[in-house]
Every structure is written in structure tokens, then in C-alpha cells.
Amino acid sequence: MHPLQPTDVSKAPLEERRQMSRSLIVLLATGVLCGHGSLVAAAGLSFSDARTMLQARSDAMHAASAELRFREYEAEAASAMGYPEVGLNAKEVGGHKTMDLGTFPVLGKIKKEVELGGPRSSITMNWPIYTGGRITAAQEAKAADTDVARAEQRETAERLDSELVRRYFGLRLAEDVERLRLAQFDQANRDFERALQFEKQGQLSALERLSAQVARDEAEREYIKAGHERSAAEAALARLLRDAGPVQAASPLFVLTRSLPPLAEWLAAARETNPSMATLQARQSAAKQGVVAAQASYKPEVFAYGEYNLIKRNLSLTEPNWIAGVGVSIKLFAREDRASKVNAARAQVERVEALRAETRNRVEMAVEAAWLRADQARRQFELFGSSLELARENLRLRGRAFEEGQTTVLEVSEARNALLRAATGRAQIAYEFDIALISLLEACGQTGRYTEFLNTADVSLLP
Image (cartoon, rainbow, N blue to C red; front, side, top):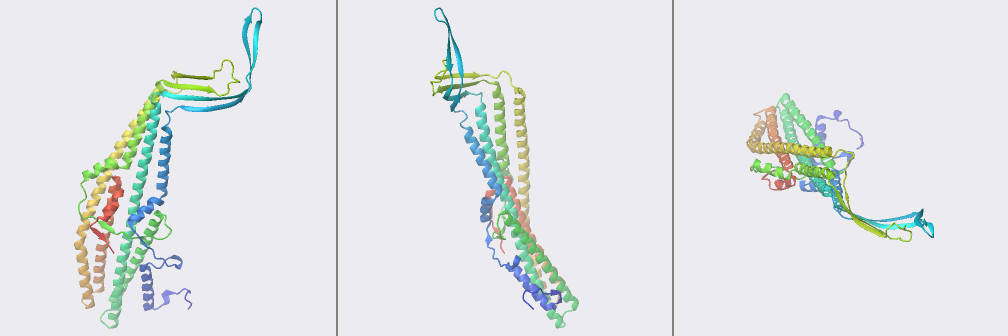
């Protein structure tokens, strides 16, 4: 048969099918079999490196950074609103003026014809001296908008950190489960091979051999399922990191067995550093400046002005070479109801204050819930130690008894499943702790500290 010709596995002998299946699973377990027949050796990626990669490649971070730069430039442009405005005017005009110089006794009525055509050029200046607070309010509002953009950038970074933890350690959990499933399958396959030998020697019934085969096939199905879940988690993490190839997680699941800082400390930190709270605080400042700007419409404006004509030969007799002065502008009647504008600005302030209070309550609820989940997972993880030790000892004794013919394949399979449940449950609780911890840090605006907790963890679930 040609090496590339498809093989009908169903027609192969039982022993050959078992060897083919085992070879395929070994290839999958070592990670050298991939799509299109190519061989890939994916290097493990630490959580710190993954975070650095995400911050550099995320489109959301690029958008938030661009928004911040936009607001900073806007605030910088508004900082010069109180400076004088100087302009240069140049124009070519055509005109004619008849000037009546009066009637004289001898000369009679005298008129003078003046041609006003020709080039004109002048320098003008306008300097706002007092605007009722309108300029200051606009500058403060732009500064508040910059603070909003800065807080939103932090919020984007916090959200990305949280999503990265979920996907990164979700992959880490999937890899651990796949490894446990592979170990279970290897043990079940060895039990099946021993059952075949015992059956040939007459020490085991066909029913017991079939039970071993069913347990082996079930373990194989679960291992294949775990492999697909791991592949899906790899693809999700690679998509998040904008990486073309599969990504393996190098940093293990971890748990802090020591108690977390008290809840009161986390609540105080959330009030100070939560980016959503900072966003609304900045929006509240901008809304207050809106009230100041609306009230400024009632106040007069004082300004200085001046003009200097550069081309004097074409000026009329009444046009000065230069002129300067101070003016006052008072709006007596506006097209819009100024009182309603002030009330609308005050309503906006009340709205932002209410949103800020609601957000504070929501943030505190999130902190409390995450802190309780983390503490619960930490306590549950400690209690898994005895279950895991019992399951290991039970499987060891059941395996030895099976080799001596004193127990059944079903009892060995149940002991192996109990150990698997304990091991996967322990890994799942570690994952829940890691997720609760990042949720707690996100609610407090401190996801950057996650690596610190990872590096100082006293329990790591290494393979």
C-alpha cells in the first residue's frame, strides 16, 4: 500500500488498530501533529510576555492612545485662547468717492473726486481681556476631557488584562486537563493490555476484558475532547494576542494560600484608583465648567483691539493710519433662553453626580463579590489536598489488587476516575482563584499588580 493512500482502520485487526490509535495519541500529546501535515514546536509564553505583547498589539489600546493624544492636543490648543489674536489682511479694491468740501464765497461749491482703488493691507489685533469666565471654563473643560481620555485608556488596559488572564489561564487549565486525560488514557490502555494477557492465560473473563476495553475507549474519548478544548483555548489566546501560530502558556495556575488583605483595604483602593470612578469624576468637572460657561453669557466682554494700515497711499481722508482702543460688548437679547441654558448645564451636573454615586455602589459590589470568590477558592483549594491524597492511594491499592486478581477492572476504573476528578477539581479551583483575583484587581484599578501576585504565589500547579 502506498504510504499516502487512505487506510480503512475499521478493517484492520484489533491489535493493529490499538497500536495505530496509540501512535496517533502519542503524536497529539507531544504536540508535533498539526494541520496540513506541518510540524510545529510552539514555545511557551509567560504571562508577563503575553501581557507585554497584548499591550503593544491591541487595537483597542491603539484607539485609546489615539483618543488621549487627540484630547491632549485639544487642551494644548485651548491653552492659548486668552492670548491676543493678530492677523494680516491684504486685498485689492476698486472704488470712487465724491467729497463735498463745502461752499466758499469766491470759489463757490467745491467737490473733490477721489479714486479709492488699489491694494490695501493692514495688521489687526484683538485681545480678549474679560469674558466672564468663558475662556477659563473652556480650558478647564478641555483639561477634564483629557482626564476622561486618560481614565478610559486605563480602563481599556484593565479590561484587556482581565480578558488576558481569562484566556491565558483558561488555556493553562485546558493544557493541565489534557495532560491528566492523557495520563488516564495511558493507565487505562495498560490495564486493557494486562486484561488481554490475563484473558489469554485464563485468569480473566471476557466480560472483564470488555470492561477494560470500554474504560480504555472512554478515556480515549475524553482525551480527544480535552485536546479539542485545548486547541480552542490556544486559538482564542492567539487571536487575542494577534499571533498567527498556536500559543502555549508557560506560567502555571497558582494560588495564594495566605489570606488576602482585608476587604476594607480593597474598597478604599477602589474608590481611589478605579478608572470608571476617575472617568466620572473628570466628567463631573467638565459638567461644572459647562455651568460656568452658560452663566458667562450674562456677563459683559471686555477686549482690546487695534489696526495698522501698511499701505497708506490709497487710504481715504477718513481712514486712519492706525487705530487702537478698548471695547465692551454686552448681549442684551439672545436668540436662546440663557436661563434655560444654565438650568440645562446644572441638570447635567446632577446627572453625572448620580452616575458617579451609582458607579461607586456598583464598583464596591464588584469588589466585595470578587474578594469573597477569591477567599472561597483559596479555602476550597486547601481542602482538596486530602481528597487528592486519598484518591492516589486508593488507585495504587486498586491497581496492585487488580494485578493480583483480587479486584475488578471496574473498581480500578472508578478509582482512576476519582483521582482524575480530584486533580481536575483542584486545577479548576486554582483557575477560579486566578479569575477572582483579576476581577478583584480590575474592580480596584490595579490589574498591573497581577504579575506581582503570580510571582509571589506559594502554590503553583506545575505539570
